[in-house]
Amino acid sequence: MTDDKIQAAMSIVLNAGDARLANKDALEAMAQWDFAAAEDKMKLAHEKITAAHKTQTDAIQEEAAGGEQEYSLLFTHAQDHLMTVNSEIVITKQILKICKSLDARLSALEGGESHA
Image 1 (cartoon, rainbow, N blue to C red):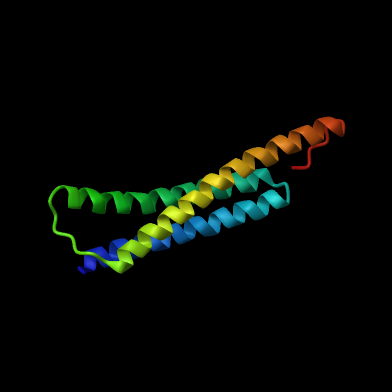
Image 2: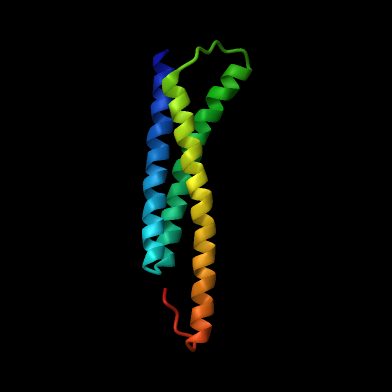
């Protein structure tokens, strides 16, 4: 495995890991009804997962263009990590929508007092 491939795999793991942490922070903010903080953390999670995905896409495009690639357990792990975190982010986005909708409904029932 070349140094470039190791660096690419580690870049994917690190960026996806940062995205996972931001996603977790967003969930914690939602638990406190702090939707502004949750949205900020989701924005960071999106930026980090996008960076990880770009690194993966670059590697795939290189191989598709005829570049020599050997199997790498590290790169496979990086891709698995990327896709798992991406799924977590998709679910968290839906949870945020649900929480905001629930807060709006509670606010209407309680006379306009938002929990956020």
